[in-house]
Length: 173
Picture 1 (tube, rainbow, N blue to C red):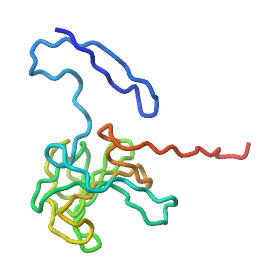
Picture 2 (picture 1 turned 180 degrees about the horizontal axis):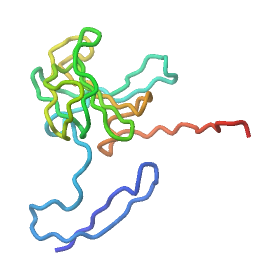
Picture 3 (picture 1 turned 90 degrees about the vertical axis):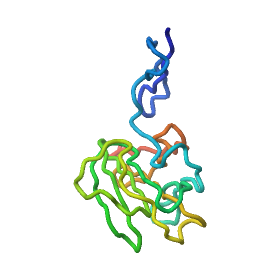
Picture 4 (picture 1 turned 60 degrees about the vertical axis):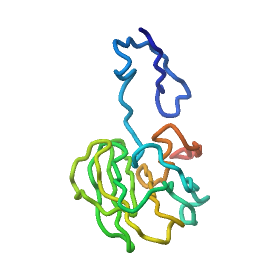
């Protein structure tokens, strides 16, 4: 049995690559394993989306809030190394450092990991804490940064909005 597999040719390329794959059993995967997954089981409801500020110093929502319950397991969205796991501004936070300068953040999360620990995609990194304030109900705030720039974490899953920024020449020309 044959099937078509559509994959992205690369970030920002605007092109999809269509290849054929042979399937011997319906239960076998039809293509490569995705590099990213939701940090909560299933496909959680997005309570509040990414709303970056117009300027880096202004107020905005630098991640997405996912509906959850206190005690819900939080999983690493992708493989990496724990960069931070502990208290920050009266809540506990976990950050995962990924290849290519990406960093995912998870809060409020009581960590079950320690800084420097390698984690696999989908590995439990902690549980959602019951802390009021950020959401009306319990939620996981999931963030994504590339270096010091906030990005929509839903882009990792093929969702979200792309915001194009100008590229300024490094020398006057």
